[in-house]
Length: 443
Image (cartoon, rainbow, N blue to C red; front, side, top):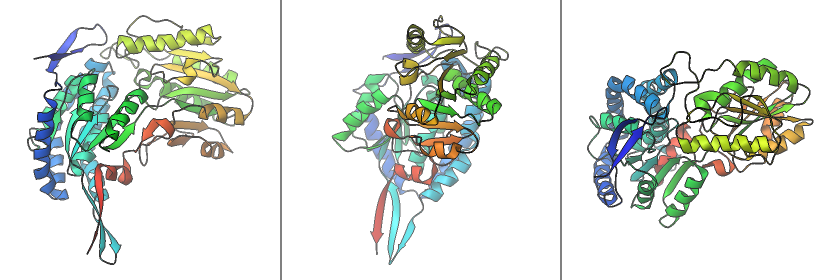
């Protein structure tokens, strides 16, 4: 039996292992899911809700263990890992109520009714940066809608997923929720299997492959495909507030977050003050292992991702960027807090998703220039505008699924990307309904 080993990103020591789901095993896994789904779908929505809530109440007993595994497997500091685990466990009852309300039949008048029926078997493919929360955001509405779920977690965080699924399965009916461990081959086999829907959070490249594979059988898709979020700082902005957000958003989870601020465009009239205050705040951040005191920037998850960040920094340096804090090269596994200015449109820090604790700053002389550069990206997940009068007008021109004015993007309504950052969406009533088959019944 082939095993998938999980490694500590700090020292690459093994943390544990799980059995790999082979391509040959996938048909049996799907067959079990199909059989379990038929029985699961026969339960009423309220009966499924009660069962799911009960399963998550059972999850509370391993909440601390889940947080510890999040820290160990991907390096997230213990405070943030604790928030992720607690949020998943404690918000479930409310989340289930919201989903149940979204899936209630709706009268269309004249004897017609709009219904939300199960799709069948849903594959949930989740990332490593929020290994519990991201999986849960897709898994929960799928289960509530009467589908069975096969979770394929990132190979970087298999232990979190294994504990999560095994604990829920102490309550859920056999076969309703299963886990498929492995790398790209396992993911491809799952997408190509006889399933009904793929819910995916990950890279744009992987999303394109999934979309192509799903096309032959017209599988339903919900995909969040990353971002390269811009931030515009107008001359009328509260500079202290803008600085606080720029640094916090760029450094959260060591920058390994799909809605991290990746590009900051600052009005030249306030750029000197903004840059000085960004550097002063960035110096206060501490880098280290998750269990060290006062650490708020952990390691980059693996060597490949670390080298990707370093490569972008070196590219910026060669093309004339100026480092206000930090440097262009760091040894694995850490990237120190880094502030870079004079970013130009041909630099990878502007064109690529970075996934590292970098504040990348450009100056503009006219707001139209900032808007044009902010929108000059295939991505369109989140964006933010900080300013006084006129900030809302600038926000209206941003090509993103979620835009914040004097605040971060998201937090209310669906989690949705524009352009190549998303296909479908999740969260909110409309998002929950994407995990169900819409049916009109006329009597």
